[in-house]
Length: 101
Image (cartoon, rainbow, N blue to C red):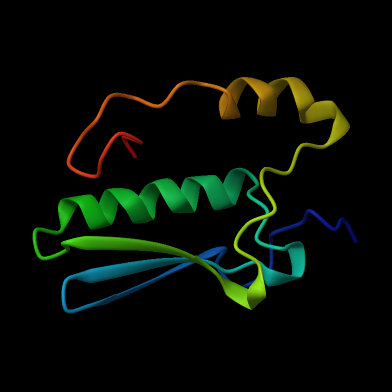
């Protein structure tokens, strides 16, 4: 089995929203919450959903299992792709601050 395989039933990102606080949880503790393509896509969707919800006033990013995030998964064949994607400058400031999620 490929250790980078994310085809299990559990989603790589969970979202819990309560009282205007959206908690986005990286949920791949067996991989130390390392970010692969499906996880990055799920994060983008979770942030977009929080941004679209007028009741959300705060976003908390959390890592399940005692590790926040080990970083991006870059297999040797994907090093060039990861280096390009993860080194891009963030877009300009928006309502969430200078990171521009």
